[in-house]
Image (cartoon, rainbow, N blue to C red; front, side, top):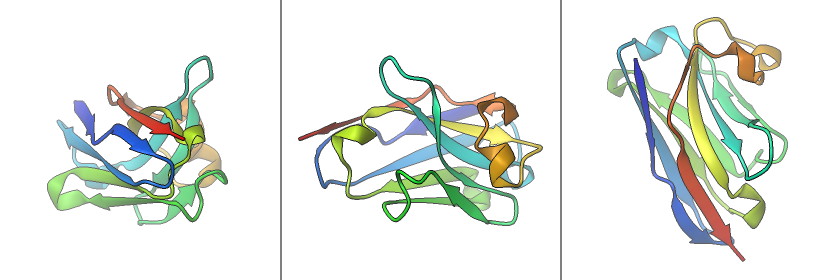
Length: 125
């Protein structure tokens, strides 16, 4: 199983990025998918999730700015990030969960079977 995240980069405040996570070795339609991020010196934190039914969940810090989506036919999950601020600077990780469907479970780092390698997002002021 492999989760390949891409799309990170350096942008200025107010800019946008679209992250992609291509999944191989499993059927995306069987997994809830999420994005987490980890800033230097901080713990990994939940960003957004989309469950098997397409319901989405977001951290309060990104609501209204980020949008998670999935294309099961392409085995790919996306994170559209708009209105970026320096506080969004972090390594972003995609993750797959076979057991999560609600926010309480999906926002927990321990609920995930597989993780991608991360893609770096840097937002300058």
